[in-house]
Image (tube, rainbow, N blue to C red; front, top):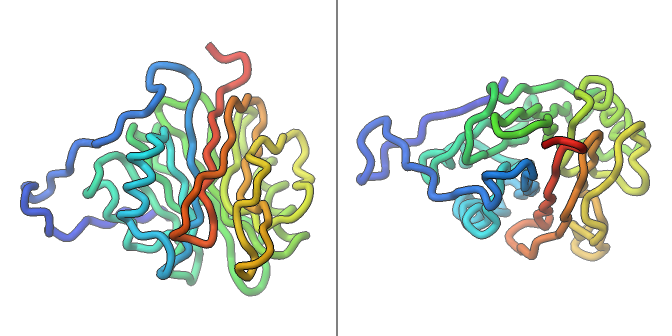
Length: 235
């Protein structure tokens, strides 16, 4: 179940229950192309809500996906406006979360994934009102067999036009039938602060990718990635 908690009344310029208007407008609000940013925040010791707000203001995404988001980030819609939902991992203080300047078509859903004995995993299924496709926000298991099983499960339930983004914890090919890896090819994470690897990815089906970049950011052990996606043949 997604969690949206009220922000404590500590903003004196707002009346009780009032939210700020979004200080952000998408860079391409009028076209069919959508910009998505994904970032593993590194719970508790990594990125803060202020770091996320800075990223939003800098990149102006149509959708921001977060992994390892704690309840601290539930304040985002009260700090910057927009729309937000968080899906904690079962038994953990963190989970996957999303933010958009535009309304969701429906409240993001939490989908249970095949999981190992230590950490149970979920994916967040997102449909934005201005999107012509569905987005799955993931933080997959570390096991190289298990995370591929989780991707295959998503491939079975996602519609024909869909994207999967997040922290895949996966090295090598994804082996996800009918999906293409269109994310940036540069490293996104330094394993034990030494070995650069590419584990933050974007897979698509029925979509075109016109841009894929790794963003410079050092407040987490992961760099954010950004992609521009468009439904193939969509006008």
